Image 1 (spheres, helix red, strand yellow):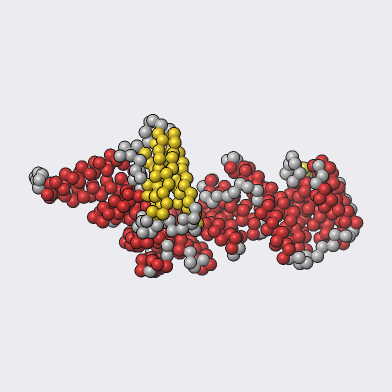
Image 2 (cartoon, rainbow, N blue to C red):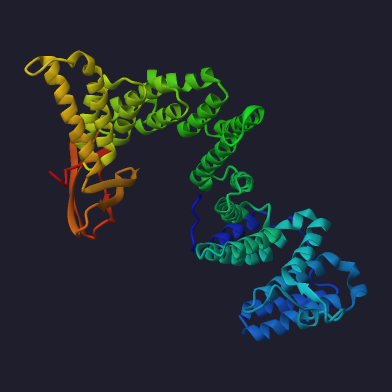
Length: 511
């Protein structure tokens, strides 16, 4: 899911909208001076806002404004745009007062007609502001302010409800926010929340629609670029899930829809290799190996144009599409740029295993276990290597005894298989990583230590941070104390002013 901050959106919304409105000054002309009801109602609304009146006094002032704007409709017909602009503003302010329900008795907020009927304040505000925009579309900037205030409150409330797992309440609030504030760039925040809600409910189609809308709303604003790219990749993953659930022509049609989606944005970001690799994977799903192969071949033949991470991600894409030859070549190319990348080492050993190229595994596994010695998954790969090795020797070793070289080799393979399997199965500790980020000379490494024994343990992780040649640029010792039996604790290491760090290794915790 896409994460979203729980800090107040209101400040962001106010600052951005204010800048936008400044650029549109003069685009909308509304006369707030006539007739007298409009003038008096606007004064009541603005002075109450500026003076920050207590809620009950504010409620009376805003209700008075509503009365002025609804009591004598014939006198207001000469300036309906002014009347509706002030009415929408007053209704929003009423709705935002503390302890105000969504729907209230009309008489309680200033209406003189149908006093006992109920009115939804934000729905009525939206209708009034819509009428302003219908009369003069240039006034959308004028109506944006009151819409924004209510929207910010609702989205913040929706985030809080979502974090408390009150999913129905979160959806109700975010949809009310969108009723008022759709089609503005910052309404992408609401679609972020809505998409997460839909994913929680396994509504993949709805989530795709919401996150795609989010991408479109962020547009070409460079301040949104990183988040926009991330959202594109989320849509990519969701549409892949949709395609995987289908068969035949429907599956192909969904894959082609995904390709069209990705190609649209890859034209906007032609240098984004992760996006290009996503296009390649989608093409592979339709059997178009030629198009995907162009990107993979360029990475393999011209690796200087790409980072090791970009090449490795393309290798993952190829491997997931069962293009193991490309996958192996891409992981090999990534390791030429960064020989100590634990992910590339693991992936290459795994693809050699899957492709029955076990004779290539030993040097890769040796380097992998050197940088990542406390991950049982690595020993599973080592066990699979020795299993394959023993299998090839079995027939030729029949009837032979040591010191015959074949018998010795077969016995060694079986002993090493048992040792690796035991190391995997009975590992007393697991070290795992969930973050290794780089920002110039700043690097953050984070993960978990899992104590797989019954007794409480304290660990000391001794890290070495490496450049692409394997040179040690920094060493750190990180204590992870009092890890309970059968439980885990997290750790985090941060380096500053260390450009050139691309990999890490740590010393074994066990003998």
